[in-house]
Image 1 (cartoon, rainbow, N blue to C red):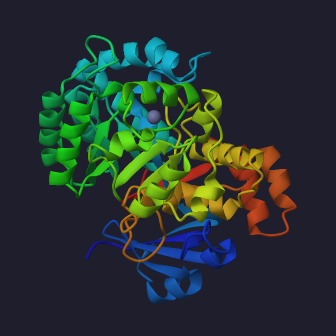
Image 2: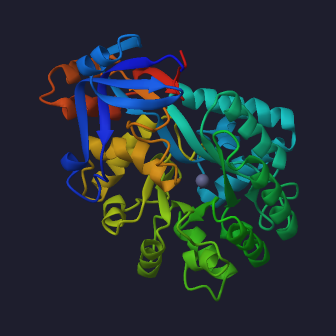
Length: 430
Ligand SMILES: [Zn+2]
């Protein structure tokens, strides 16, 4: 039997979705709490004194008043865009052509891909993010580099080869057949290997021919255990472009649906400017949507209706969308989600924001039986928040009337200084 570790502090615990029912019935913070960890998993959660008495030989790590959360889950990123984060002044299509595509070309080089993958995962771990779902580039070596870097850190990650066979520059295009063959070979090798999961990844409809979408739809039908990730309805001029490219499609979502790329394990980033039919179909199929608020404001895309989509019981995750997003931090991303919702007339509660960044994102990726919650049997991926990490935050938290008033300043103003510690599969990272 491996040694036990007892981690003490305040724990963020979830029993149901706080966006679809009263948040205070779905989520709570337990004070004087303990998380017992063994063999990389959480074996018990409860009162600190009780767990201490029952497990006298466990090594104790006491975080005092710090908040122990599930490790943050970033449900939509492009790790190859690490080096071009915060590039100035373009909207989506220009931004892709000016910054993204030239950088993505460099990932044909396996050494460069490995260097950026490691850099990216270290940057995000320092922000308390223990799982990401990433696009790679069209190069299979960019997928291998990412999964190898994640395995070296024992991280649970999702990734896939980005597929594009049109409207991308020479050197960043595959074909329908090579996208199918490469994706198939990569998913057969990586899906379920250690903590890795594979996502079939057409970038978005404008960069795939109908033949490529058909091929990837067929691959997904053969491998329904995998996720399928793509982009949906991010900008108005993008949607007009899609209508021109797919004249017989009923709407943007239909360009996926018509090719077998709509389903419960589909994960669609952005989803800002949706038609009523699209919302109905997403709700019927159980597909997940991922909110990328820093990206949506940075690139000027628009405001996702989180409250309205949650009311339709569509699974929702939260993401940085690095490097269209302007931060690697899920704290900053929660703050942006709060601000975007406020502009739509909804004040998301801190319990709902933390849920989106953990259990909500894990559910959107179908990893909720393993990560995203502090509960017995879950992998021990934990992020410990110092709720007084800067003088500005500390003075506000000091006069909080309840735990949520103490947590909210860290969500709105916190950065990597608030990340007191990170645990990955029961191992402390410090
Ligand atoms: Zn994206």
